[in-house]
Amino acid sequence: MSVCLGCSSKWHDWRWQLRNRLRTREELAAYIDLTTDEEKALTEPIFTVGVTPYFASLMDRTDPNCPIRRQVIPLSAESRGICHLHRDPLNEEGLSPVPRIIHRYPDRVVLLATEICHTYCRHCTRRRRVGMMEHGLTMAELDRAIAYIASHEEVRDVLISGGDPLIYSNRQIERIIARVRAIPHVEIIRIGTRAPVTNPFRVTPDFVAMLRKYHPIWINVQFNHYREITPESARACSLLVDAGIPVGNQTVLLRGINDSLEVQRCLVHELLKLRVRPYYLYQCDLAEGIEHFRTRVAKGIEIIEGLRGHTSGMAVPTFVIDAPGGGGKIPIGPQYLISQSPEKVVLRTYDGKIVEYPEPDV
Ligand SMILES: *Cc1c(COP(=O)(O)O)cnc(C)c1O
View (cartoon, rainbow, N blue to C red):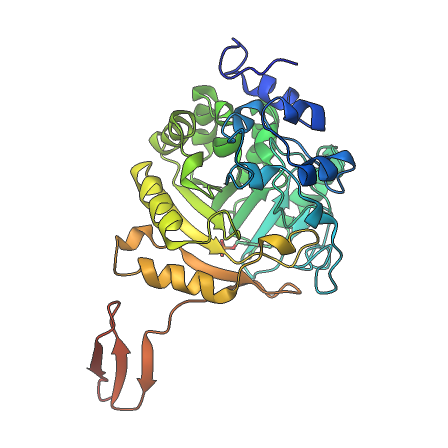
């Protein structure tokens, strides 16, 4: 095959990008010089491989440590079995009252709209399903999921995730959103998608015009490295934000890809320029085949410490560990509260000065 780096008239067509995902060793070899280990991992991949030509074009042809490449090309380390790793590290199946709903928190649920993605991330926490079964949401499943939300009045926030819900056509997505929006107690709808990063052509004026009929809509994306910020992904974010959709970013902390203060600082600054708010920085989950991406927890704390106070507060995400077994996201950070007594608290500032704050007499 020939490598099409923007030369094709189809290049800007998101459906063409999705249909032409690179999936085999031969197809990927047209974009990068595969290492022996990558060739081995691509021969019989355990988890699904698929990369849009657009995202593949961001990979460095010769550098095996390229941060884009490492997110999408498997290594043989994925097949290493390690006893503390799980198929379902967050017990999502156990927290699923009906198929495709995850109900972990009191007032919000996740609706898993699909198992398909534009591009399959090697660090996916839901890879037990995602990419492994490429069938969509059936009407019967949607009916049951909607009935569940409708009968739980405490659910005020519905996150449509997957897989990537933006693999669907505007009409199909609208069919889901319209039904969620029709439930009176649902206040906000959130969509989790990596399309602006891996297939930015998916975000079209028609798409945002459809979404804005269902406000308040929020979108969370996943930029993991500043090299994912391109004119195309910037345009996708700006279409969303211009339509009044607040866009947040959820970064996964990945060893060898973005586990440094320099990379994270540059990333969050670039995101703010796109009007995208850094929301979470995730410690890697204990999912099968992603051990080689895990960093020590201290690394994430060090990154937050290096951001907080040193740069715009809006640029600082919350570092979280999603509790193994399904307890929810736990915020972790540097310790600024040194001691606490009835009279006063002792604090430290971002640059290490010690200050006292007297408590009120109540
Ligand atoms: C992350 C997550 C949410 C949303 O959490 P927020 O902290 O509100 O962003 C909801 N449900 C499940 C199952 C989740 O994993």
